Amino acid sequence: MKFVLTVSALALVAALGTGTAFAQGRDTIQIAGSSTVLPFASIVAEEFGAAFPEYKTPVVGSGGTGGGLKQFCEGVGENTIDIANASRPIKDSEREACTAAGVTDIREIQFGYDGIVFASSATGPDFALTPAQVYLAIAAQVPVDGALVANPYTKWSEIDASLPDQAISLAIPGANHGTREVFQLEVVDAGAEAVGLPDALTAEEKTAALTTFRQDVVVEISGDYTETLARLSSNPDTVGVFGLSFYEQNKDTLKVATVNGVVPSADAVASGEYPVSRPLFFYVKGQHLGVIPGIEDYVAFFLSEGISGAGGTLEAAGLIPQPADKTAEIMAAFEAGAM
Image (cartoon, rainbow, N blue to C red; front, side):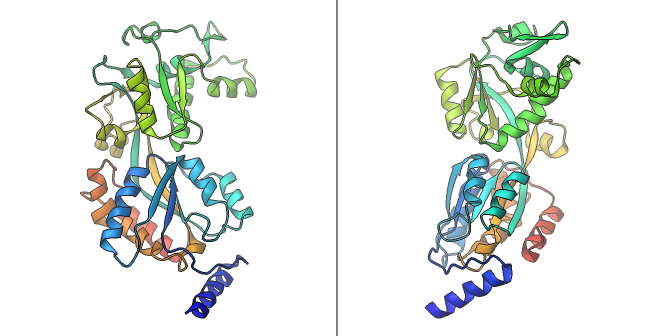
């Protein structure tokens, strides 16, 4: 049996052209990454373990999208993870890091959508936000009379009289989170464009205006959403950034804000009406297929209609399903290795 496994592993590696061989020394799928995808992947792992008793239940960790992909790109072999969960597409720089470490077969699986919401204490006032208002609350410098000045705002009502007369305090995802990139693009960048930055700014000055946040009222959360929730508990004035699915699971303690007049919901995200949303992914290390038991079956199970489809287990947990034909295309591409 040892001889058969070794030949199988060598044959797999030769076919993939990696030049690195490893025989099965681990029999549990290892997964890490996005805190947004974490609850979905955890549900799938438990259900997969129950549905396929011949495999051990996959081990699912967090660490953020960036952290998960960093682990994923460390190399090929039993000491590296098999799957990275992500709330954004993999970056070119991450693909380059993977290639440099010998990870050359990266298979992208998009499995649904999530919205990004602003939520505050359930006992606090209502918030009706726009990207422009958030930018004026968060930026270290804001435009006044055609020039950038130190942010003078201390209360939301000073930005707009329609907002609560409450001290500005924001808990946003750290740079290791995929949520941060969507927040940057769809909220901060969009807000700055709506406000209008001074025309005379150099490219470097514009980048700084978009990415330098206040240190007095902004806290960057490197952990998962439970850490953001704890921040709200310790300071009830805090407005936190969460995934829609996390908010849906914590409605008893959180109150969600509208964005551009739209209440975040699965229907609003699916229709495109809610402006701050993103697809969700996981990335499979193709070179581990056929070596670490169960990966192919895990992917098929995750993408099955009963799990991630309309009316499936994950929709009940807050996932916004993607069209069935999209899922079929992704599964076919995974099986063909054309990712």
